[in-house]
Length: 171
Image: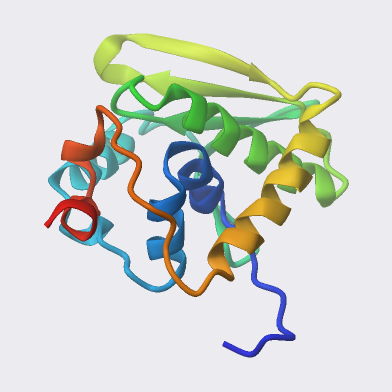
């Protein structure tokens, strides 16, 4: 990669920044292990099978952002479908990142909903006053992490055993 080209940050990278800096670095360096993960595949199937009547599904915003579905009215509402609440903080920040990117287009968008269909639960996400600064700070830190020569050290978390990158950290 050329040094002078500013890398585009994706919502996946924002979520990985919350979950695991090492996973963020590995993913950002082309080690996309998600295609081999049964957990990721189950999440994709769940997303595809849920909310089939929605008009605005799998919406691409630019070339790096793909939202599960949008509700469009007086204001756009971002909707994400997730399998489990285990990484809920990452889900929230991923959704807020979508809202942030939509706001950058000039569209009115201040809220989102994260759906957990298997749990029959949902949580509302509101883009608050300080969220823009938090996201911009996270983008700077993400760029710093992905520019490192080596991945960050392993940080053992309870969910590591189910991670698509487990082998890069423990084997």
